[in-house]
Image 1 (cartoon, helix red, strand yellow):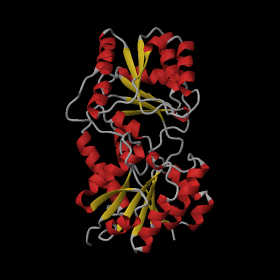
Image 2 (tube, one colour; image 1 turned 135 degrees about the vertical axis):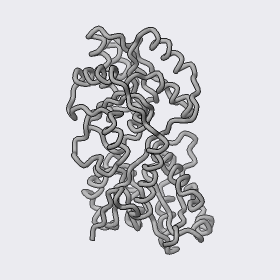
Image 3 (cartoon, one colour; image 1 turned 45 degrees about the vertical axis):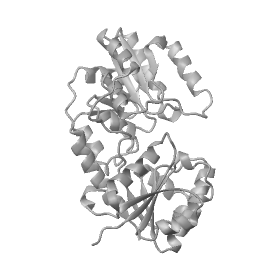
Image 4 (cartoon, one colour; image 1 turned 180 degrees about the vertical axis):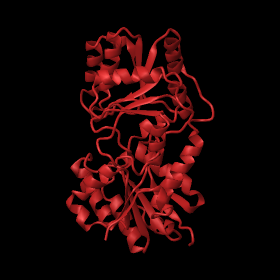
Length: 366
């Protein structure tokens, strides 16, 4: 069978979100078979770009397309009118504002195939009215980590400040990714507070920044830190530009810690990135038994004890116990390059309609 060529829609945003990064990385992995295109109203240019491809790939939701209301539908319509396949990779659904879902619905109706980032997202979409009119060719695609370990590190002021604390004997707890209420980042403050109350010298570093547009999130975060008496032990790095600097910060972390309201799900690329850093990751277990069934990398990291699962409904004290246990346990060596190569082979297989089906979860409903 001849290999297919693709047009991958990408964002022009300077600071990309995880979905935007996924689109670019997917185009990279498809290599010369993929052409990138930014979403716009140039339909003549789009028609030319589609002239020698077999299918177009959309990833949703994309922050950089937030103000584009008609462009997704016009592009999807052009793809189908020219007889090309339309693959949609859907990373969120119910969590989206209803107006965003309304903009995406016409594209979903035009899709030839839909790949979901997790079984939870597939179930959310299946419960929506538009699902009954959308293609039944559906699959679950494993999402990759937000970033990967670079060949060299680039220490900076933030990692150097943590290094000084670590040399002074402090346990450094870390969390990577944006800070927002549904992620329960403040639970890590409670875990640190519990450890300090037990007499441990602890610092917490949040490698990321607060989500903009959410009222009082930052204020409430620091008010809680003050209430717990750990304000001077908390660092929020803000946006870090390069992987080399990010992993230099990761190098100073002793244990990464996450406590999600729904437990671990396959969409948590930040947990994958932390798991590949060589530092132990503590996270509460998935609420559903099949949450990670399609994601070989997550399963391997858990099997190799790079990611330690605690009870889904664990509290701060139970998490604190797990942090201390992981701190005193040598983290396994993970061959990040080989693992990522295997993961991307699985991802491409799903996007290209189920080649290597033994490595993925693939669903085709009649």
